[in-house]
Image 1 (cartoon, rainbow over the protein chains, first blue to last red):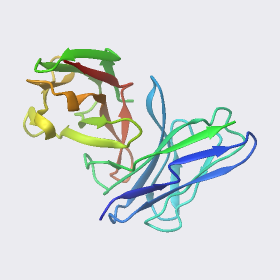
Image 2 (cartoon, one colour; image 1 turned 180 degrees about the vertical axis):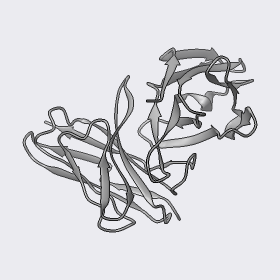
Image 3 (cartoon, rainbow over the protein chains, first blue to last red; image 1 turned 60 degrees about the vertical axis):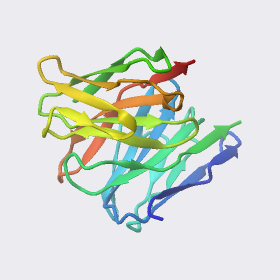
Amino acid sequence: DGGITQSPKYLFRKEGQNVTLSCEQNLNHDAMYWYRQDPGQGLRLIYYSQIVNDFQKGDIAEGYSVSREKKESFPLTVTSAQKNPTAFYLCASNHQGIGNTIYFGEGSWLTVV
Amino acid sequence: AQSVTQLGSHVSVSEGALVLLRCNYSSSVPPYLFWYVQYPNQGLQLLLKYTSAATLVKGINGFEAEFKKSETSFHLTKPSAHMSDAAEYFCAVSDRFTGGGNKLTFGTGTQLKVEL
């Protein structure tokens, strides 16, 4: 089935450790995105990528890093510099073009203790 | 920058009653507007979108929304609520960036509760 796969679904890490969240899509989409969701704040954009080997910071990029070495993959690393990393993280993708629907993965819960 | 405001973080309706979830947008250019639904611990699913064709947009699960430029609104409605409609709903506007792509700016969401 075509779609966006995020893994792991649940992840626990100790404070000060880096952690990488995986996002893979088989929809042949050019653009990929990472959003962070916190209760009562909606979704906020962390990073996005329009093409392989290129990506841009979103609204809350501090403490995060990404790579886009393959069209299908857009992993997100939450570094120890992120002050409040516990959140629900959503990966998304779409075809390039204004108004094209953005599709979302099932999300990953990260809890830092 | 474009933005959306969702009035009411929590809405409660009786099963069979009208559902009305409010969304107002701010945009300096003709907007693309979206409504997404999220069930607990899941990703977002597109309900419907407005892309400057018809102002009344019909979506999945019996939902529809009307684009009103004069009111800068894009409210979501459903004539008769069902228990399965209980979820969180997000309104979003498409921000355009160089290269022809788009990214979404979301409202803070409205939690819909459906009571018997």
